Length: 110
Image 1 (tube, rainbow, N blue to C red):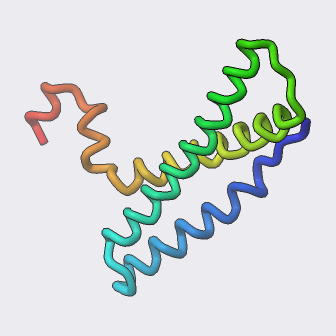
Image 2 (image 1 turned 135 degrees about the vertical axis):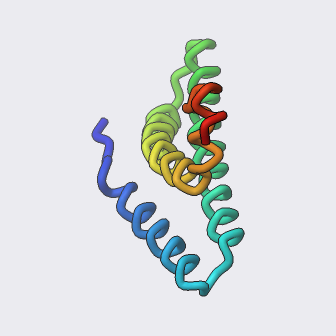
């Protein structure tokens, strides 16, 4: 099975850049930008995780159905986009995210 890496990533990068630039120009509020990408993150997780969960159950019971390959395809494709949207999420919440990576001693210095 062949998986596309570039094709699903392009619309997400374009969409993020579009909503981020609209937010920076004051066309939309930051909360709209964040809510939209939180929703996309949730949907990508539910579809990818749901497909993975169904595949695991089918595999556990030794069931091979015609839907196994499409589920596997969408599980991988949305997993790739999930990684990308997670990077966007970290960009959005960078100030709170970086505190997780700074040691407690250094945190007191900031």
